[in-house]
Length: 424
Image (cartoon, rainbow, N blue to C red; front, side):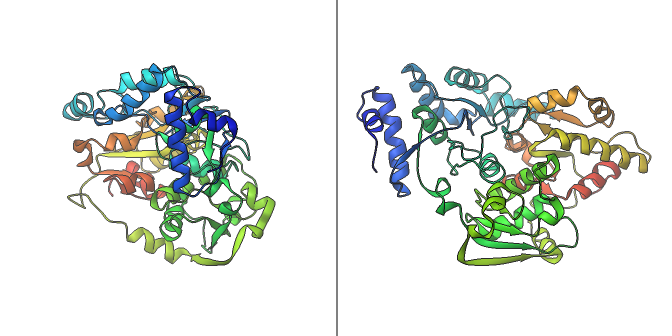
């Protein structure tokens, strides 16, 4: 790898042994992917994936402490993934006992480390850091050192920033030295599409289901999606961005997609069009039957497939303000139709703390609370990591949560029916 004089100086230890080790790690990481150089991180803020104080993560806390003891801090302030605990989320005595005594015993300590290292603020805990209410939205062309797959794919695709699918710790190291290896999705060639996906459905496809189908088909490749703009339009308004947030999270978790292009909609697709598609790109046609096939092949891992759901999570990744409003209105209509006032399954809507604060200032907050739904900043994945929660029959409209836990996936309409009418 060719380094600049400043980069070589850091590697040689001119700024201390700790920074030298950080630089060495990034160089080795880059060389593993045949990167020829490092490039500056240009975004204002970073985003970290590790937010949870699991007892078994002691190597992470040790590394963080070594950085702090050496007087090292991040070149950028940063946001971090959601907290794992919230007393407002339904949990029984034994589940809470496991959470607090066996699992997230280092949460307070780890949050103190994050604050000292450069956390944006005490509420900067969310997987959707790019929401306006959070304040970590990179600009088109910004080079990032992020982790969190759903945030990376959104930043690359919807915002036109540039970031590889980094692992935890690599994200903070890039932020500390201010450089990341130049390869993959940072390069023009690495952002070209090797798949053309043609959406030929008779109605607007479910975001989480469409993303799942594409992710499982193209895996880590870059898809160029044609036909979706017929349902989303040609402008990245709140509705389109919310849709693409969920769509991208499914492509990233059900596959390993770090970037997608939507014809006539996402920035690079509008600017460069089909020139983004490589010669010989493979084709995948998605119609109603294909989406139904994908959904029907999801495994049901509940011990009793016919069990009555005991909990419902909506918001993985975290919901936008527009989605909270939309869900409130849909819930009210559905409950009125069945002559009920409250949901019949305990239901949790998750969103970023800043989004929840904005939502609480609207008339919709009281209206949603009246339906019995709980709002939270929690990470549903971290909740489901509890072995006692894992055994529960939990339903969700998140394909990411389905993929990583025992939660069972249903479409938004199916979820709405289940929590207002019962069943599923």
